[in-house]
Amino acid sequence: MAKVTLENVVKTYGPVTAVGDVSFTVQDGEFVALVGPSGCGKTTTLNLIAGLIPISGGNIRIGDKLVNDLDPKDRDIAMVFQNYALYPNKTVAKNLAFPLQMRRLPKDEIARKVAEAARVLDITHLLERKPRELSGGQQQRVALGRALVRDPRAFLMDEPLSNLDAKLRVQMRTELKRFHQDLKATIIYVTHDQLEAVTMADKMAVMNGGTLQQYDSPKNVFDHPVNTFVASFVGSPAMSLVPLRRVVEGDAVALAGDGWQMPLSPANARKALSAKSDTVILGARHSTIALHDGPREGAVPGRVYTVEPTGDVTFVQVHVDGAIVIASLAPDVAVRSDTNVWLGFDQSRMHLFDCETQMALT
Ligand SMILES: Nc1ncnc2c1ncn2[C@@H]1O[C@H](COP(=O)(O)OP(=O)(O)O)[C@@H](O)[C@H]1O
Ligand SMILES: [Mg+2]
Image (cartoon, rainbow, N blue to C red; front, side, top):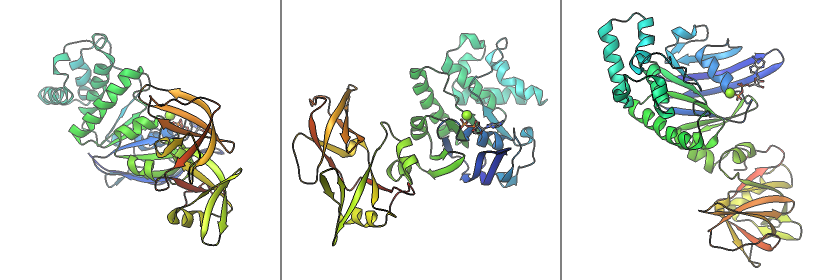
């Protein structure tokens, strides 16, 4: 396999900038998820790497080779699409062999490659079946096998699981992750589903509005989002974001709401002081917020809006200063809507963002 490098890649359609100045490197054998909301430029980026559309600016390299002007067929990459597009009248073996026959490879080499791909994907027992005799998951493995027999330098996948029902999608996520581990394949995987990205990828490239927001491991993106967009896009339920007033009295720094103040730890005080204005956005994930039924030192008053039991955990939406904060509780703890609660934010795990730039304060 090979590494894939994007340098200042741009794609414009007349006045529309679909991809604006995107740079990142996918190392050889790495699984990278391109993730972001609909229309943020994921498919366009993938199509530029595949060579399906001409690039407007920047460079794309596969291995060390500049591929900007290379035809898709000469880039040695495999695209796996949403619909598997298997030939319905051919057996699995013939589906796998077909791309190799098109390339006029010798018969024994075709047989060897088909057998090897079938072994790796654990579909040897399915080789004589037709696609309609396979489950959705098995069809997907055949589609992967058909890409695999071509010895591609990288796999490009555009939302390959989005047509599947929820249960199969979870199962195929595991399969794809295993496929990547076994093959040490270079994979660039497009999805709008942050959970798919977090669970499968070595790194995630979070995009918004055609630009790359953050490129890092899922853990770092989750723990250290660079801005409010990434903070609210990654993680479910989303991180709560509350704009608050910064109050400075001597060395003490606090965040203030309507009738209350939360003193900040020294580390958070330093961050808050670096904000460009007196409004600072507090960010907190549900798992870092304690819920109390009475006032506590440093806790923030709020009123319960809704209670959403999910079985394992109960999510509680709380109105705090005109914003909604989501906290989570064990399922056996009783809370009712329209009651007063006090939220204890874990200062070592809270995030602060600049209200003007929306960037994380560090
Ligand atoms: N052929 C095209 N002509 C004009 N605009 C396009 C074309 N293809 C994509 N776009 C625009 O580029 C942006 C990114 O599209 P796309 O890469 O398909 O997003 P995503 O895959 O993240 O949903 C969108 O605003 C889309 O409308
Ligand atoms: Mg798309």
